[in-house]
Image 1 (cartoon, helix red, strand yellow):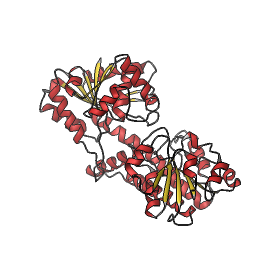
Image 2 (cartoon, helix red, strand yellow):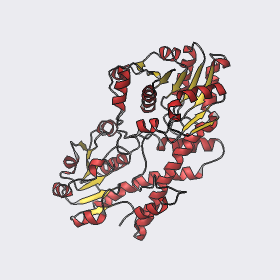
Image 3 (cartoon, helix red, strand yellow):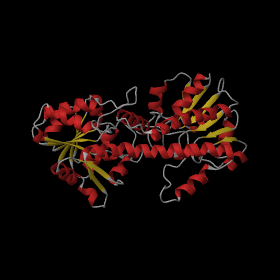
Image 4 (cartoon, helix red, strand yellow):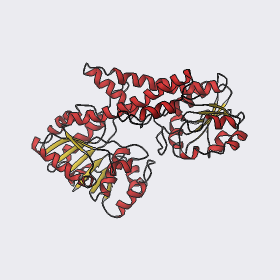
Length: 435
């Protein structure tokens, strides 16, 4: 089988590369000529552990191809995946202009029957919109439209594709289901659960899944805030909750709020979808509000650790990406903290193992020094703030940090360290949900 993947962003590149690793002939298409030129050389534009090696391997073995010519990709393929961006509009709704444009281009390039699959996260009803666009150029019997939402975690995307919790396929015809079932056949060998449904249900499953995970994060953050008032320990609360099989331990880690490319965008989109249907999602609306407040609470913790105001002070930010093992700075709590400190008249010294370039593009250089490593960042700072729980921040030489800091203050927004240990070394220590 030969497939085409339109869009070589995070989802498209991982999807195309992993299918190639399964032995499928894959052509990835993108309009960005510079990006395609780099990909042909095996240079990937994102940070994702293990992905670059797989890209180079499958290019070398002749299964993975890159082009800017959508006609070339579509005409050779039986299945065409749409994996372009669906960024949020000002009202939180998903911008489908890229999806619609690609659907037209696919229809115009087709030379036979195709299954058109949305891999991008799209609102319920997008499958119908694509079908109408395709029907303007092709007879109904020449194509099927399906939904195959992705559940890739940044930093673990390759493993998530190769060994997923489940594969969701929304299709309206048995022919489309059979083709997609055959494409995913390697996962049957490891007994991966498959969910077959219609297109609209598949579209909703992705939003429902991300919104529920975001709900767990916002819920435990609210419990952490209560713990701070009563002298409780959110670690113990989360562990006890997680031992209940109906709840489970995952996504019950208190922190400065969620970020990244999925949870913020998808929760806002689901709120917008629900309102449009006249069935508001009150829980998801609250999740969004709690998360926004939690980021501001993280900034306030930094201010309070500095005596109430960051003006004239220097803050060392250890970690910029919204989570470890990614370079994704979108909607990251570190952005709220950095902008807040600078607005107060303070300065920021920042270090992240992967997200420095993205952060520099978004934050610029005014008021921020981008440092070589964690120790360079804390040098001369009035407070060190752990914002992202990268492994290399888990065993810092705290004695060295104390000597480099202007004052021994740590704000641990990921609860990486034990309060008694850090305080025993002479630090003023602030965490999330622990006293």
